Every structure is written in structure tokens, then in C-alpha cells.
Length: 547
Image (cartoon, rainbow, N blue to C red; front, top):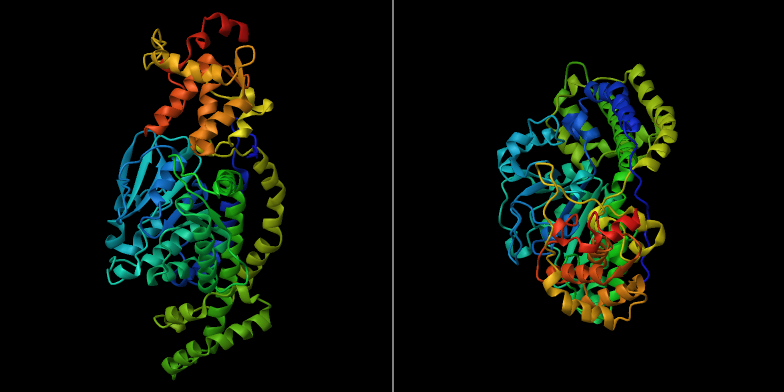
């Protein structure tokens, strides 16, 4: 299979300031927030933004029915277990877990998160203790989490469990996250495709955020091609009914975990689909500013439509008599009012909120306290949409060129690691150092006792001048049926001298790492000193030749 490396990994220059994000923040506080407060936008829609909403890292929301592989998918991305994670056929994840980077591993409960100004979760407070007791932040040192945060969610209940109550408004919480995250991963199990009532309500919460949604048909290696074709067709048909749009959602077919996949006729298709999805996720840090800009523009358009609605209702209200009857009549006539505002003020129909939800919100409001249009505020909002955002585009393009993509399992693909232009970019040439600053004792090589059997495989592959080419190594590695992203990480760890080939020691190291992975161990982030081949250690002859 031909898998290409889709991006390089330039380092962000020292002192690089996120100019676009800061400017977006200033525009929001200067032009949009005053009009939100003037027309009580937060009473009808989402709460106002805070600094953390602009400054936080890109977020990925992972959701789906229970036992579809949500937690396993996250472990696959970050390449390690995380506190509180459990995997099983029954509903094991019973709370929302925000996985974020931290120097020390620990869990922060939901109530504490709502008072932390550095976290983007302060506006979850209105959902109350019933939800906050089921919400936590897991902090841990992890390379992937340095660039992106991941939200694990409770499994969506099936029809058999639909009578169970969660104690909080689950679809409303999903919609809160959907508005703020950069990507939504919706997982389905190829073995049990069922659209329950709660799943349908969850889809309703995602309406308007379809551009962030990526649907994954997981565990596809466990069914044959005929079954996969039927399940895929059924899923596409069901999604078309739920979202009611002529556009077809992209459905990725895969088996997202770090264990060997079952061999099947569509094995190559699974690898290609995995590459496409990982490429989409790994580019989130590059596209974070674009997403924030897009969400700000979307919010500004909704604020403009909201201001016109509130102003119209205020103008139509009588001064003294029959206020209550007039209020109910205006709420009933809201669809007609929407059409009038569209024609009079040329507000696009797509900018208006959901009419039924707006009618429900208006029932508890006092129309007498509404305010009419304030020309200065509307002019400021028009300036934001017409010129201020456009002036940010050049700076945005410059920033995107400097942004890094995600490392680790998402850092390139298997064959791309072998390309000559990337040989010297591997970070495994420095020897680890103990906490006291001294070099660790690495007299004994942990792989030495297994090397005779590894050498037999090495020489059976016919090395040329004592080394195996990347093509031969790739051909042998793929027989293990491990995902390409895992094999790419093994290659980066094993090619210690970065020459694009493996000698007998490097190959023995690669086989040792693969065997450990097959036995269920996690691969190391960087090569520990006890695994560094003797000939590649500082002070050896080969090391001096490579300098």
C-alpha cells in the first residue's frame, strides 16, 4: 500500500504569538459582546465567550453508542491508558472526561473545573450537580495532548435502555460541546447498528455542526466484505433520514485500536480510511485559528438575526393593555416574523435560530424589557462582518504556515517515514539522562539475549552490505497486521542513526518492539537507554563516524 507523508513538522519559532487568536478575542469583546448583552443573547442561546474559549487547544469530541470503541479509539490516538478508562462490552464510560495535558497525572472533578478560569468549562455550571458529578478532567503528560484535548463521552443508550434517566439534559450538553470543539468523531459498531431514541436526539443536538462531524464505522475487520457492504448501506440510509440533508456525510471504515487486525478482503481499504481520518485529525492544530474565526462569524450572524427578532417583538408590543395576549400572538406568528425580517433587513434565512426552540424560550420572557435596534451597535456588528474579519485573513495565512501538526501515532504514516528527506528529523539520537543529570548506565542491552533468533530473520531477508532497505523491512513488518501508524512509530524508534536502513542491531530492536506490542505493551515515546543498540551509543566508533 502506498501511504504518503502529508506534512512536514516545522517547529514553531520562539516567541511566536498567536496574533489571530488575540485579534479575534479583541474583536469579540469590542464589537460582539456589547450587542449580546444589550439583547440578552445568552438567555436564548449559548453563554458569552471567555478568554479560555479563545486560548484553549483544539478539542475533539468522541461519541457513540456504548461498546463502539470510543475509549479504545482515544487510547489508540494517545498511545497509552488514562486514569478512569475502562473497556468492556457493557456501558463502561459513565461520565464526560476531558483529557488534557498536564505535567502531573491527576483528575479534577467537574465542580472544580467550573471555577477554573484557565479551563474552557466555566459555562457548564448551569447544567447543575447532576451533570457536574459526571464530568471530570484527566490531566496527564502526553505528547498528543500537548496539541489537542479529547472529550470522552458516556455511551448513547440503545432502545432497550431508553427508559433509564441520566439526571441531566444529555443532548443539551452535547450541543454545548459541539459548539466549542473542532472535530466530532461519531463511532458506530459494524456488528450492532441500531438507531435508538437517544441517538436520534443526539443527532438533533449536532444539527448546525455537520461540518465538524466525522462518522466512523468501527471494527470493520470483524465482518466480511458482504456484511460490510450491507452495514455501510444501512448506515448511510439511516444517516440520510436523521440529518435530512441532500449532502451525504463521509463515513470512514476502520478498526481503530493498536492491536493486530484480522485479515480480511477489505484490509487495504481499512488502511486507506485510517490514513484519511488521521490526516484530518492531525491537522487540527494548523486549522484551529480558522475554526475559531469560522465559529465567531457564525455566532455574529446569529447575534444579528437575534437582535432584529428582539427589536421587532419590542416594537409590536402595546404600551399598556393586552400585553399577555399580544405576546402569545407574536410567539405564534414567529415564522411569519422571521420572513418579514428576512425581507426588510436582508438577513439570510440560514442565520435565524430554530423557530420552535425560539418560541419555547420566548414563553418565559418579559417582552416589555426587550430593546429596540441601536444603530451604533448594529453598525459595529456590520463592520465586524464586512471588514474586520477580512483584514485578519493575511495574518491567518501566515500563522497557518508556522503551526505544527500532531506528533506520535498521528505523526506521519508508515511509508512516509522511509522517505529520505525525513531521515534526519527523528528525535531519538540523544541519550536519556537521569533526574540527577548523569547519563544512565547502559552497559547491558536488553535485546541482546533475544538477538540470535532475530538475526535469523534478518539474514533470511538478504541484507545488502549488512543492512536491510526500507522496502524489505516494510514488507516484513506488514505481515504482523499491526496498524501502519504503530509500525511507523516502531521504525522511528529503530532507525537510530537515521540512514533509512536497518542493520542487524536496529532490526533486532524493531522485532523486539513489535513483539512487545503484540504482547500488549505500550511502545515508548522515546528510545530508553537500555534499548539503544551498543554500536549506536555515544563514544562508539559508529557514533563518531556519524558526527
